[in-house]
Image 1: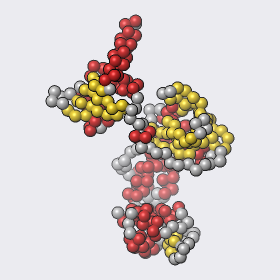
Image 2 (image 1 turned 180 degrees about the horizontal axis):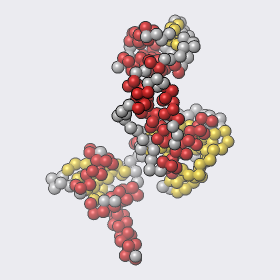
Image 3 (image 1 turned 180 degrees about the vertical axis):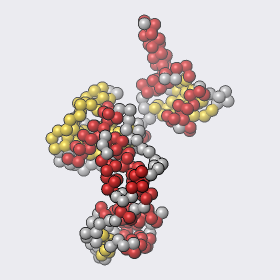
Image 4 (image 1 turned 120 degrees about the vertical axis):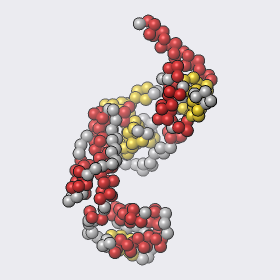
Length: 302
């Protein structure tokens, strides 16, 4: 929509000293003529834009100009508020709500109105998560190393990283940083980190954004096929989506999906009790039998 593009252009100009019409056209996937009309519209709205021709020319906002909050509509501010509240849910403070009060000064109905979007980015372990986020965020801003103990499927280790970004992905929080022991950028799950401590300052290096494609981060090693009883349909829909299975003539569910490792497969199938039967990989059927037999023996002893 045009209004969203106008706000986007203005946001770019407020953050950058100067840009060009071709760059804006490429950014918003419109023609240069459309960008020129947008610039005219912003000028007519009272935004003092300056255009300079030539090799080093471009579009900029007149020096000293400050944005008036009335440029943003109530719905725009409510959308911003939803995002800021989501950050408060993990920060353990009200700093973002306080920021919103500054942005919406004079529009008290915004903060007390009926919010239709509620976002909580915290976890079951909110009390331990919030301090981690605060410490890592502070380390990122001040450019300080962070040391911690890390728990992974392959074992425990002590790590020291140069932190660059906090990321909320796959319903969990991660930190992206340069790992000194691996001498490469790595993604660390905050829920697996303990004993965090900030260390010495570091000189920031070029930090590429992580490739968060699930197929790269969680590469499939095995294609699983299993027969699942119909009373567990809700689990398949919730965990893997309705496309992960087909309903058989007898009502059972033929499940098919990729898994990362054998341990995940055995544990997942076993979690259904007698409500699931693994078809493939067939060689893991014996592992599931041994897993179940081990549980049986343990409870027979008691």
